[in-house]
Image 1 (cartoon, one colour):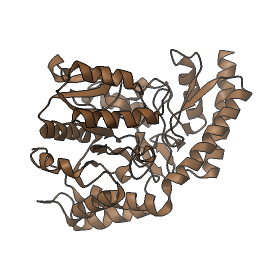
Image 2: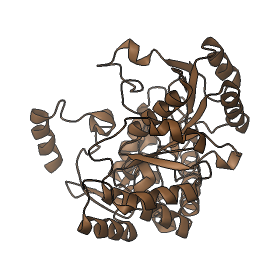
Image 3: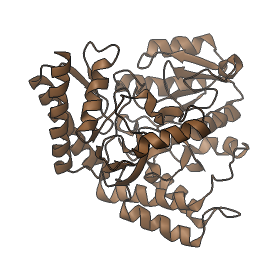
Image 4: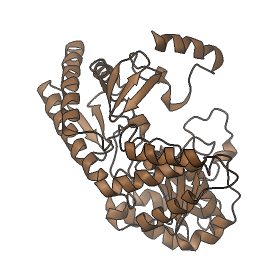
Length: 404
């Protein structure tokens, strides 16, 4: 088996053989570590097994693997150049597109990963306010730098000393957190909905979203929305735009370029000057190919109403899974937006049922995840979801037989 051989080889030259959130050792036993290719809403592992893909490479693939319009745009730019002595014209075109698309955006800055963007956004907030403290929801994921990584290995307490935690969706908790560092709050950073791993997702309560905006205004702090995971799957204009809440700064990445590496911070005009004062850069941050892919991705989502397509497919999947779970005697929770779904089993505190079920799904050609939210893409058709539901139904049956 190629996957097993690659794992053995990797163990000799890579710490632990693999690291980070893609480490298959963290999943159910049957999950492959290495993949060969992707096409539309399918992926193939190195041993040739095909999967209907409901992780979409952990979010970046929003139009489907190897989308023709994106690949053509990337290839055109690659033929001209990618990593040059300065950015290509595409950087200006992409920034203009973001400013035209996102109502809260008057400017854009680019980098490579979501962690880059969240960190950069907080730097802008601190430069603007001259303050140090950041209010952050307990358990929220904002990246993998020392200030926010879920693991404390290799970090120091000082790197987290300026974080003050609150409970998501609780205005009382947010106000209390602010009161503990009154006069020194640079930013409130918040995800558009609560998408912590290992827990049911929780949609934002509009009163909380509006209250966070009002508190930031009262404190003279920046409201930062971390739209890295949810951006371009809920609303192209920004995930809190439907609530009438516009942030001062937004961090973007994942779905921005359909799998090409890019991230961005967009901000309000009042923060343009502070943003100019940062020294924040990277050798590959201005590579033109990913920018061309991002421009094509956002335009395609806009022109094809891609989010609506994901909503239809996500609703079909959710309804089908509910019916199957009920027919097999399982009580399940399906949480989060239908475009960023997750399923958990009632009473499954150790996730043993979810692990078994997701592994069974895998055996029937459906790639889902037991403890992290899933992702829909615009490539998921009605027929694709129907085929996936055949696999999940068999997985429910096998799970019921196993647990009794």
